[in-house]
Length: 492
Image (cartoon, rainbow, N blue to C red; front, side):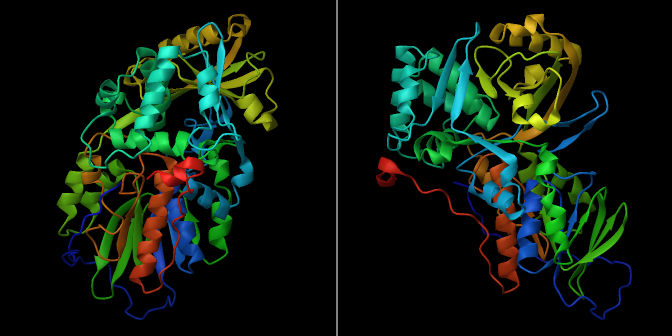
């Protein structure tokens, strides 16, 4: 998945930068990576490893982009903007974490607990005794959350997805589910919750090939692929190794440095970037920005053939929100580390007191996630928090007697981009920047993955590979996918 498009890269019209000395004082190649999200960090660290001098530029005062944490003055706590998890199949995100020494800050689990209103639990997860794709079947068959009809329809759907859905299929997930006779319970409690949460969109806005990819990667290819990793420290702390890694090779990190203007000097093939904190020069640029930020930067770029086509591609993307309610109670409300909550507006619970015991919180700190809900995102703060508490009490009765000490509501309205049918036709490749000596990164470029941290990490590695190839020093940074196990080795 992820179409690649061949374009003719045209040199832009020459733009006049401030006079520069034509004597080259920098023998090593310098690359500026614009954007300190996962895409930018993965590109920067890979290029630094390749021996280039990297300047990683981020407009905010911390790293992580849409997967970051910050100090919230209202609750006097460091919180994540929303919960992000990784899975065993996220090989490039894992590779990036390994490169920066962050893997020991991730807690892994092979179980997912689903809770019904009233508190009855069901557990999904792999059983190592059974070969793929049967490793998750025993727990699915014994899950109380699904009726016999639900289980039959899910088995029918999984059987159909043993073979990949054609990447160019025009069918939405909703249409695919109707065609494969999915029961109401299967749709509401699995497809709308688990898969729509993974892709952060409603089922009538999801391309069937991407839904099939999630099913195969998380539930079918292998037990290892579906294990879930949850950060045991604030998200931005995961990236604490980035600055130290860059500093080893004369590379550098520049926070609070928004790029305001970019100019290209054609005579010496050099970029000049004006930021809030000064001017930088660079041989190469990697644009590692979300699609909307890239769109805002375009008017400040030199004119170039292909810039308007890139702008049109960017304009076709749409956002979906993720909201998180951070709740501090005076007592413990559940012993679970995490849970999926069924049949209500709230979706996921993460017990920060258990996942991050170093906080030494009195009582407990709970984070509740709501994915792909524009209705919830439109609610006023007090209304959203009241709804969250009311519904949370339906799953965990202790909420009714607990005192809410403090609360924060975070709305990441630009959390992800949607993946409707045909989305790959407007996802450019890393090499499709309209300007010379520049490359694209970001979860929205052609990675073959939906809007995830894995897609962002892949894009950074793809951009780093393309840049190294362009200077005649090819390197491989893209991590290979996990190989299918069991019977899945023979199903293509």
